[in-house]
Length: 520
Image (tube, helix red, strand yellow):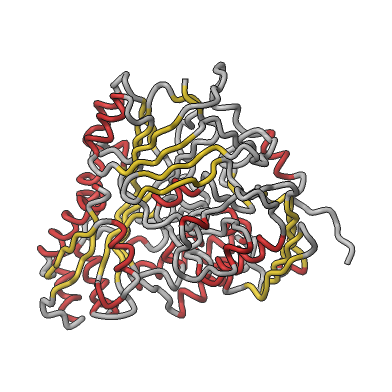
């Protein structure tokens, strides 16, 4: 079949040339040295297909890449792909790959690797069901072409292929052929990125090194798109659970960058000349998930009761401190984004104990212990949960607060017999379809017929008004079904050494990246 030129072959170049200027204006990047990153805990795995943990993506994005990525305006554009287009009314996606892209084992990336990676992600990936419930097959189209045949048009297909967190990063075929739903072993962390995985010293540090044969794009950097240059010889990610140690270590030069610093230290650090602060303006939010597969939380009345009992401003204030770092917002998306709407928000932050007790009585609740899992690995998770637990106890709920390290909580939440509710957070996403709770297999297991119907309406068309109308139905349903409690928007912040140059003024997503960054 003769092919027309792929529609996005030229478009991304045009977009990228209009992008932001190099981040180190007036400074010459220095090649060499080591970046030491103080992270809050050890990631459970670096298998980007399976894990949605922010810790995992922060590391893995440096050595695993996707076919598409995002500009600073959150537009998905080709990355490992050279171009792409939709045909047959949006039911056939043709992707042309860049040639000469090498894996860290020296092998060239071809369509066989991409097909194997997409199929494994489609079968087991954390965010894959949103796309793959519409996929009939993925096949190679020559050495550098990939065909994705859809059952129905799916408007946000490029967005799903661009999002690395729980997303379709590309591995060699031989790694993917043996991969299952279990996270792959560190020996198989083989990608195409500017840095390559070298070693994981269990409980201690993760070491990446510059990949000197990296096939980088040549367009100007724009968001996560365009040129990625590895200036450091090494990046070392060090788990440092104590926030004071992260702060003092960065001040002393032991670490170059430290993540997720407590809000009560922000004002002092923002004035401290020994460090720089960076607020992650991509709004995240807290989530108290309900177990809809097994146990008492399968009763929607009980979930509605707990929703009625909560007031979110105290939760946000206790968790994040200064008002620069949080905002009361019950909408699925943040103000200022394309998908923000106030429709259906009457149920948010009700602070109505009388209503909560009445609904709990209707649900037949008789004071049984409610197993509430939370981690202390993230200080804001624990602080939010202490406030929420008190509000729920004051409304008559018997909260059994169970504390775990993050890796253990992630393992336990996959087993529905072990918990009733658990607390986590979600980073910013450019399209609501990327929320983990939109995945019916994500722990919490929200999968009602109405949700399926409205999701199909939201994804079946490119027409923005029709998509917004469907999203408003979904948001209204969210506060009727109550799959989880949404706390509100929060903006975490990091600190880093003034010696670093090229650090972005903020993160577009929730994952700071260190290509195009160097040290004086």
